[in-house]
Length: 260
Image 1: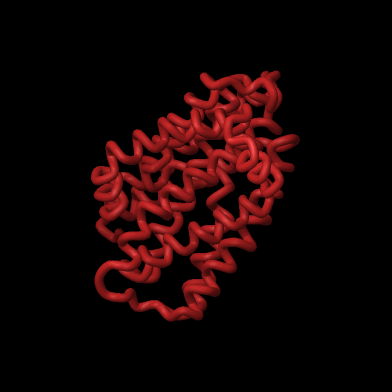
Image 2: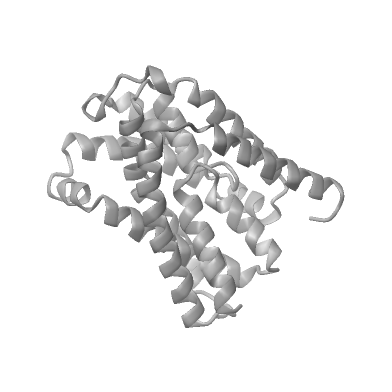
């Protein structure tokens, strides 16, 4: 695996982790395009560390506040939102891993993501709850949607933002809580995958390529978070819905024709 492939996958991960188009689905397609398996899976974990760095950089003040007061309202909401995600992830870990390896449902998952984004977009103007109005019930609902996003091409940011909008949370607060909730989710996923990074043969990837990919993921992830926060305040999710529908249709055509 060369540095250019790592760079491309790093950019893809950084951009798509926080845009509602599914980073895992895009990385799966990227690995198939570059014919990478072992190295690609190893790199996936490091690229997620890059996006974890990105979102922590954006929300470092909030993170410090939670660390200092873990049972503040924000801390409790993050715990409440993380619980259903963790339960779903651990209960169906083997199933999700098998689905990710085969990629057989990826096309349909892109289509589902697009449908939810389009549907949620009609609710966005009706949100009246601000950051201080988010309840534990809201956090549990959003966390449950996040758990469903463990499927490869179901967008985590897309589903959590959609869930927040369904809960009548305004766009600014929806983006804030979605991205903040991604921190324990991404960190937990990296921890679960860490045992695979240090067991068995070392994957065929150079340290320089690994570093380039991780830095690209962090840089473009930071830009994506900032841009998405601004977009949600004035823009629409329907463009992302159309994009993932097109990706899903192309994937299904390639699968049915035996070319994927």
